[in-house]
Figure 1 (tube, rainbow, N blue to C red):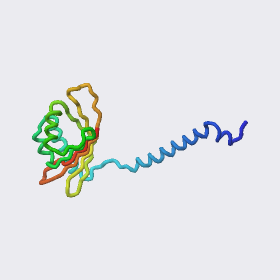
Figure 2 (figure 1 turned 120 degrees about the vertical axis):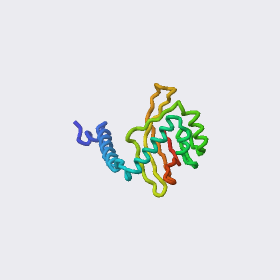
Figure 3 (figure 1 turned 60 degrees about the horizontal axis):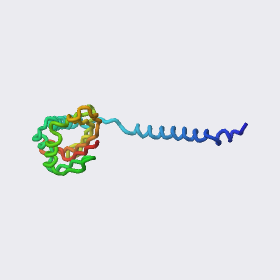
Figure 4 (figure 1 turned 135 degrees about the horizontal axis):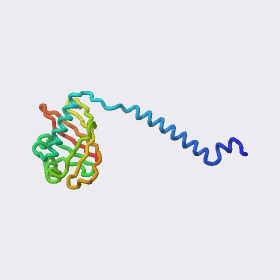
Length: 168
């Protein structure tokens, strides 16, 4: 029979013990960090509701190919960041691409309850949420939720989209 030293420090036991301790420590640290992140609660429920309404108006126009309404909602100084398509700064090019590539082919649904809205003093608001897109040309294709960020600017009591970050 070996000594207690042999039991703890020879063979796989010591490695297993260290692995277990590391796992417990990692779990404790990460769980502590997750608890530091607070659940979203709208700081301004009226603003939240306004932006949710604007999202609905915009995407109703998107889903029904109402280019005029989309054009009215996009700001002239638009920046559209798409993780796969890059940066677009031309409102007219974006509207042309939507008309040619999206109209009658793609629809968007919002992931209910996913929208967060944060006020931006003397500017407008930031909207963060999740949505899905369905390609009508590929009805069996699986759609997975993707994150989006929209920066809204309020001018003369009208909301305009100035920046979009689309992540897939």
